[in-house]
Image 1 (cartoon, helix red, strand yellow):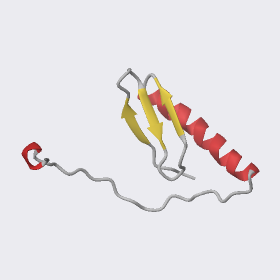
Image 2: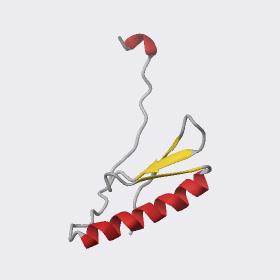
Image 3: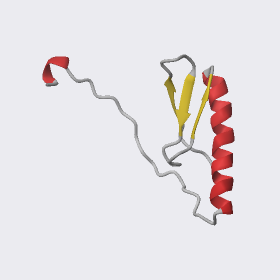
Image 4: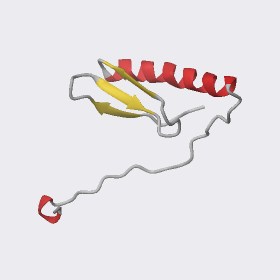
Amino acid sequence: MEYTVLIYQSEEGGFWAEVPALPGCYSQGETIEEAMENIKEAIEAHILALKEDRKEIPIEETFFIGRVKVEVAAVV
């Protein structure tokens, strides 16, 4: 299985990651590489918990990520 992972730079330093298809599945790391290793472990633990609770394991649906530029003057 593969899941999309979103990685953000933390204000305190380091990075944090989330998995949109697995609500509540988050992790962090000092580097992007460490955050990716940690989120992999978090995904595995999350799926194991779902199995133990006999809940359905979400399969990621196709989605797209885009960016929209907004002029600051247009925002009130």
